[in-house]
Length: 320
Image (cartoon, rainbow, N blue to C red; front, top):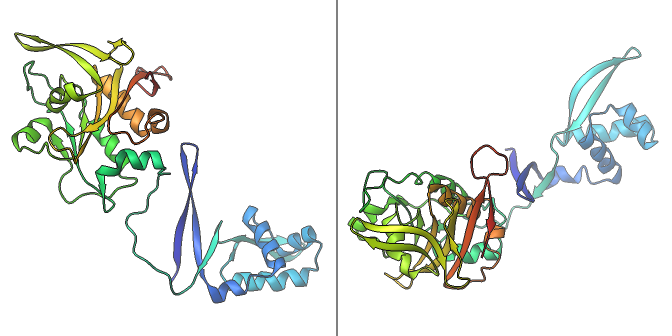
């Protein structure tokens, strides 16, 4: 039975994969000679015919043919095309794969879903409470799209949770229970005592509104006859107030309803600010979590930018 693996490599923010053919050890023995490896190296770069190889390696053509037959028998190379040259047929060869491996009969051990992300210690620490036995352990909470709350607001940022879920899916398995909840359902079903990831600011997400007093960088919320008036983000640490629509916070705190759990908040002054926070924690997490060192209470201010001029946030700056 043919077996294949994917060799994964992270190149900056781009993941690259290479397919590996797994060869039985008996087959590998037939291609261990130095000349065979030279031929394999040439044929991994481009297709060639034996006489062409012989000239490049300054070897006798019959010796090259001998190794070509061995490599073809081991399924390491294959004929890609044939061409008439001076009355004879020249067969062009190429390696069957860009990487080869072998396996021995023992040493198997069970693993969970392989991680396709370069999961370093910082990212592991930030999400450690949310991963149990390699499975997501928590709830992603978004604001209800139906009018709710004192302002009868309809959340327009819930779909950003889909981008977040795709990111989390690179290093954690899908739980058996549905992981995404509306804020009104969490309140009605009294599920606050979970690990929670809140998507959306206090105007559209009840949970963010209730947790505001616990955040190290808070949303300005002033009481009024209608409920609350919102006036941007306020940082006690720097004394700065951030009122731009594209501004928000990425925060992690202890869950006040259950100190053994944690809450991550991705919330903006407006929906576009929440989008900037989701981009910050997914596409640009290295920059966002640069000052995170495992502390129980963490928050950073995120400002979104539209670098390509299409009217949509695609990059961020970390202000504090």
